[in-house]
Each structure stands twice: as C-alpha cells, then as structure tokens.
Image 1: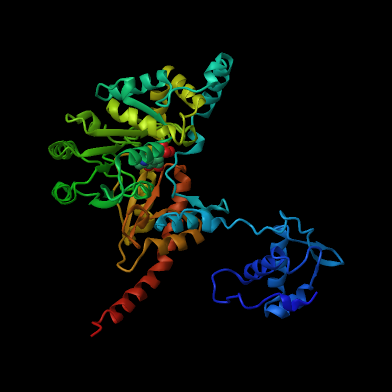
Image 2: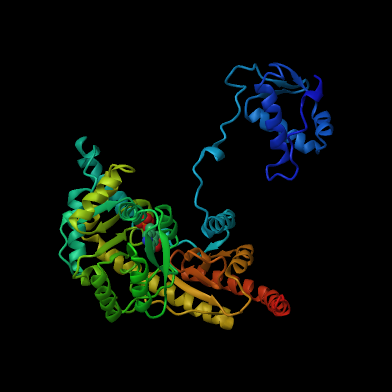
Length: 505
Ligand SMILES: Cc1ncc(COP(=O)(O)O)c(C=O)c1O
C-alpha cells in the first residue's frame, strides 16, 4: 500500500491527545472514507513509525487502538489488514467525551483521584473516608434478618411501594425522632437512598439557578457540588469557633439566601458542636427571616463524653428546619437508607422529585431495617460501637500529641468520626503532606476539599472510626514521618517566599 495516503497534516505534537491516538484517528478517518479500502494491508509498524516520525512503540500502540476499534486485524506472521469494512466496523468510536454534559470540576475530583490511587496497594492506612469500621457492622444480625424475612416475603412485597418509603419503617423513624423530642408522624418522614440523595432532592426542590445558599466553611465535601450543580451561589459561614450570627444576618439582608445547610452536632469535618444557647439564637434569627435550615445530623449518636444538645429540629418553633440523617454511620453505608423529616408539604414535593430518579428506595433494605429497629437491636448496637469509637478517638488524640507534637494543632471532638488538624508551619500545605503521607502509606483528606473557594489549605481531616487503635497509631507514626521529612522543604519555602515578596514596582 502507498503509505503517502496517510496524511501528516492534521497531527499536532503540542496537543494533549497522545500521538498514537491522533495517528489512529487519522488512519480511522481514511478507512471510514474508503480512501483505505477494506482488506487492504497496512504498512509494517517500522515503516509507519518512520512515516509519522514517531517511535516504534507509538506505531504499535496505534495499531492496537485500531484493533480495539475493530478497524484492523493483525495476522501473526502476515501483517495488519483493514477489516471487512462493513459499515459497522468502519465506524469511528463514539466521541463520548464531547457528547457528555461537562462535569463540575472542583478541588474534590483531583483529591479523590489521588486518594484512590494511593489506596490501590491495599497497604495504605486510610484515615480519609468517613466510613465506620466494616468489622463492626451488625452483619450477622442482618444476615439472620434476611433469612427470616425471606420466609415471609410474598410476591406483593417485592413490588412497588410508596415513594416516601415503607410505611412501618416511616412510623418507626417518626418514633425514633420523637424519642429525642418532637412530634413527627409517618407523614413527616421520607425514606431516601442515603442522606446524600436527600440532600440532592432538597437542593432540587428549593434551589433555582442563581439562588444563594449558606454553608459552613468547612462543610461536608459532597454538599458543595450538590448545591452548585443545582445552580446555587455559595456563601460561607466560618466553622469551627463561635457561630457568627452577625455575618449570617448580613448575608440574609444582603443576599436573601434560600437556605442554610448546617451540621450542628459533631460537624463533618471539624468535629465542632454548637451549644444550646447558640442553637437558640440561630433559630431566633432564622425565624425572624423565615430562613430554611437543612440540619444534617449523621453523627449525633456518636457522643463520647455527654449527650449533645437537642437538635435544631427539636428546638424549632417556626417550622423552618428540615432534618436529614442516615444509617450509613450507625449501621453500614451499603444499606443506603437515610431519612428526611419535614412538614408534609415538603415531604410530598420531595417524593414527586424522587420519582424522577428513584421510584422508591429498595424494599429489602427497608424491611430489614424496620425489623432491626422493631426488635430493639439498635440501642444495644449503638452502645457497643460508641464505646469502641470513644477508645479510638482517645488513642488518636494520644498518638497525635506523642508523634506529631508541635507540627499541628487540633482539638479533641466530643463525638463523631473526625479530627480536624491544622499544620503549624506557615509554608505548609496539607496537599503536599498528603502526597508524602500516601508515599509512606497513610491517607487523609486535605482541607481544601471542604471549602467552596480554597485552592490550598493547612487543615486536614483524619477519620478515626474505620481502623482499630493499633492501626491508627501506626498511621499517625507514618504521618509524623511525612511531616518531619517535609519540614525542611517548608523551611526553604518560607525563605523563598520572603525573598520574592518584594513589591513589583
Ligand atoms: C454530613 C454528611 N451528610 C451526608 C452524608 C452521606 O451519607 P449517606 O451514605 O447516607 O448518603 C455523609 C457521609 O459521609 C455525611 O458525612
């Protein structure tokens, strides 16, 4: 075959698309346009490489790609041939990347990629994800429940149920809610497939593009993209520290935000709890301006010192608080059951919205959970895990003090899953620390993931729930090693910054 028909003109060595892919697309276009006829023998790889001025490996990869697209076939000992050239085989692959709606890219995407690649080895101690310890999931009880429920299940039970959720479970969730104060009925409850779905649906039903939403800074890392995807503009209310109600009121007057999203108890990531008088003051302000509050409360059952103050929902006298929680932390995340407590009008609208993505949450999970609650197994399970997580929290605090000393500051959370640490070196970044730490086999989430507007931060979140105390201790030793190997670099960095921070004029 005359190789000159492979045009060189469209190749761009400066493009981010690798050369082998550009050449493959170039040849594929020739095959599709029938300039390279079906069954034609293509030049050997060496000749192709010379023609395009690329390495032999690039030529090999080009033919591999064309084979992947079913456009060519390599016959060992004979050469590479264009396939039969049926319409189907000669088609170019679908350009999915160009067809997909662009995905919002925040700092989270890059960080998650780094964390995932770090954990591939399986040797990394993960203090990153906020998951409970799989070894203390109530798996045996749930297996037994599934077996016993199987015997009772009828065909009707396997059909559709109401979008708001399995009624006996909603009734029990209302009772659970009322034990802590309140007067919810099943009509005030919607079961959702994890509280993340609840948050997504609430964003959908309340936010119009351009609306303002107030979130804490830092806040739950998936909340920010959820609100932004609904078109919200984010206003940040600093946490931890005293609740800045003056700032909140300023936001309310200036921007009329649609809602405030807040985790008053053992906040993710900072571990902070808002005290009773601040809760009351917040509610008074919200009531004055009829501000919607979404109270996200996955962690209040994990109290290690004393009971936390009552939830905002319990204290709410103006009816503006929407409560959201989940069994992902207290039981296990694979159950995918969360719940929303709100006025009936909100629950009805939320259920309508849910139908577009999920006709209802899975029956089997709802039945199992209902049975688990009905048998009274939940309170005992909570007591047991609370004791264990308290030990882990204490072990983490001791190890941080012992191994990391002055390199970071933190406070011991009264509950929840997380330590929120701050690097003391002025030139430090938690992203740099993550890179070194993952090399040494421990991971965490750097602070910028929890803010809507930060590229860099000296904060980071350590989850102490997933691993037993001995593993946490080893993880923190590795963290300390990463810190000490970076301190010199940060010292040099600080000197460089001082040298270059002269006025430009
Ligand atoms: C504050 C907060 N909200 C929501 C979620 C989502 O939980 P689920 O697994 O129920 O979707 C999490 C999970 O980490 C969380 O920490």
